[in-house]
Image: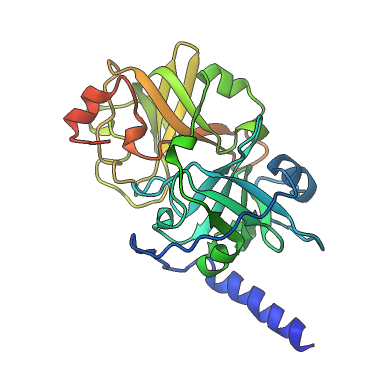
Amino acid sequence: MKSILKKTIYLVSILIFGSCSQYNLDPQTEIKKGEKIESTITIEDLSSTYMTSLGSFTADRISSDNPVVINGIVTSTDIEGNVYKYISVQEEFTNGRAIRISIDASGISAIYPIGQRVSVVLNDLCIGKYGESPQIGTYYLKGTRLSPGAIPMPIAREKVIAYGNAEPQAVVADTMTIAEILAAPKDEMHYRLICIKDANFNGYGEVEFTYKKLTASELYFGNPIPTITGVPIARELVDATGKIYVATSEYAKFAQNPLPASTYKGDITVLVSWYNSDPKYTGNYQLTLRTLGDLGSGFDGYLSTVNYTR
């Protein structure tokens, strides 16, 4: 009975405090590395086995008497604020998938930088969907909406085990056109790192959920004067094959930077995600720049004008 009571208190504490923590990691945080734990499941099988609830917002407990473990390499960074309270982890084998792991802390890259390999012990965590996009987290209920909440950092340190030295050079984006992204099965694209070549911003986007040609005062990654709504600002990216949105958080350090003029064309590296608030809608892809330095070859002139150094 005591063990059941302790477990109940532990789970309730996660539900109550897990989503409102102000846990901030200092860049000088001591990083203690562990040892690799061999995988027992792939991300693909994890999703098909445990993510069983229907709907756009779900959370299913990963319950097993045996270890449920995935391995991968961190492909995200939160150093410029456009990635916030999560890491993306990509499997390192042919056709390996990626997934978002929500962690309730800022400055996560102090422990899980780009190129850091991790073993993720998933037992008693949750896998679910936020706007149809799979995530790993804890149970989180807001009103009637259930979704994977951010894992409290003390628990994340036990569950997401960093091992070896970070190797940023080992993180290589796959090259795809916009048409190929749009045509690919969504299950294969979630949080995958992609490089789109010969792409440019065309001066269109969404303003208060209306698609339009942007005025001079709107030609920014985010709003010139942030409204702190937390709603990502969508700007249209094009290549020779199609159009797609790049979504930027108003909290990103570069949110108030002007968009590159349409004359700047080149390589753009992004994390691919999907959002659909309701199954009756079609939803759409949302691409995320990890840093402004994800604007690659072809954008050096633009980066110079905003005094950005890679």
